[in-house]
Image (cartoon, rainbow, N blue to C red; front, side):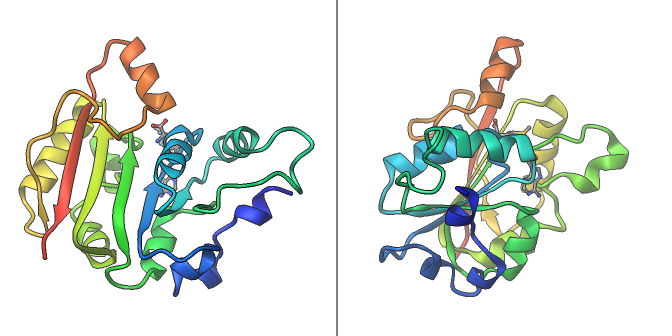
Length: 203
Ligand SMILES: C[S@@+](CC[C@H](N)C(=O)[O-])C[C@H]1O[C@@H](n2cnc3c(N)ncnc32)[C@H](O)[C@@H]1O
């Protein structure tokens, strides 16, 4: 009963800000929110921004909903006004969003698909950059984090070979205002070293 109250629907894609019950010009999108820690923390820290959080993994969606509402409050508990959930492939939504509609895009610890033959499944991909560039406003930030050495090398290669984004070197420590995620905690526990990139859509 909580999900229908939070769902970002196909019909909202052409005019995404109208899906939020308050006026704001600021729209952010997170791809693959996992358990939702980052999305909830961002929504809470930035009530001025409307955030669409995307996830296809059912357990992740359930975890997000369970942390948003107390048991028994599914139909009535207050929900964050600035958070909506897209429960399908984020790429389907991205293809439907208007040009220059996003102020910020978050990609926190994407699935690495480390085998070379699966590289086309990686979210950071040369074939996908024009779509991301289309929906991001000039000057918009695209944040990417990864702990996987194959994916880290891949991001460096892909972003080093394109002209749509400014792509400075990543940092090895999570910047302020990047809430932690469950997957990051696991990576650190297991001794891996995440990298954090901030790309900027060129104007
Ligand atoms: C390795 S997990 C990281 C989850 C979370 N960001 C974190 O850091 O804890 C990657 C997540 O991205 C989701 N995902 C992958 N591709 C996606 C897509 N195209 N659209 C929506 N979610 C996606 C997966 O279901 C998975 O839960």
